Length: 315
Ligand code: CO
Ligand code: CO
Image (cartoon, rainbow, N blue to C red):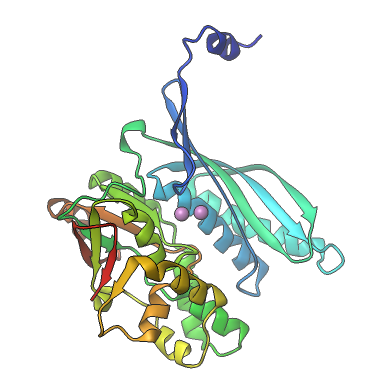
């Protein structure tokens, strides 16, 4: 029997769940090592397979960074209709993912393909995190600042791509943001003793903000004009380039949100637009903001935390 199992059976082995269901990723402690694990799979949102593989890899790694962790190893998950795709397409997707993983210092060590009616690709990711510095979704304190590290509008722009309504330079901007790893923002959040952190993905900015305050005694006050947005996102909303998920998000999360009368319907949609490989939404004490300002990375202070009833107030 292996030493590890023997130890486990002697009960001297320290193994427990530190973060379970409901956060960006799960965290499991084995002896003195906190292991962080997540999985995410998406359908193509750009036409080029290499770029799709790269974006999906960034997207899957993001939940590890949202916990303050470092990714180490990954397994690929690929669903595809074998009659519609050449094996070379799958190779390009994997090559794109590998390219991102090498930047992140993580390794692809296996995976699984299966027959599906539409192409899907993602990674399950295992990483490590400092047990005492785990960035959880809950924990924001009144008086904290709320910062966001990428502009929103990805869902709108990728819908516009499908509707062939997008300009090349706007698409390229959206792709560049999706390919930006959340690694540095994550280390800065840990360094700045962030009180809470999550990544903005399918629920949109305000949906994820709701998850940070729900059932707590704080409110987030968000200044809509401070929220960074991708070029032309508002114009594309006017053209009707709004993904179905945006309406679903608005409908579901509006119960927890108080919009001031100055917020237009289009702005509400943008604030709930589902993101792929979105930025980190971080709360921290004002005194610790210098960690971000001195770093030179892109971020925007979008609001503040106050005592409240688990609501989002948008001004
Ligand atoms: Co997440
Ligand atoms: Co996720």
